[in-house]
Length: 91
Image (cartoon, rainbow, N blue to C red; front, side, top):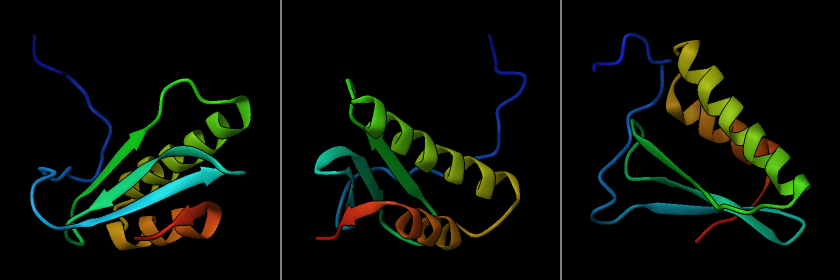
């Protein structure tokens, strides 16, 4: 069965080769990893079994990525918004 409708999203990359990994945190708890290889594609890998607070941060990240993609905004803007709204580490 083919999908009839899928919400807009940024393209995902292939996770091969060099890129950037940003660890998103909630008061020390790792919420997930945001990855990118270029300024066109992005990956979001949330951790399972999050606390309630970390689950809210996961929802914030996912909402930003969905909303910005839906509105046709560049991925760089979505990444900047996620970093502005969350605690995070950079490599």
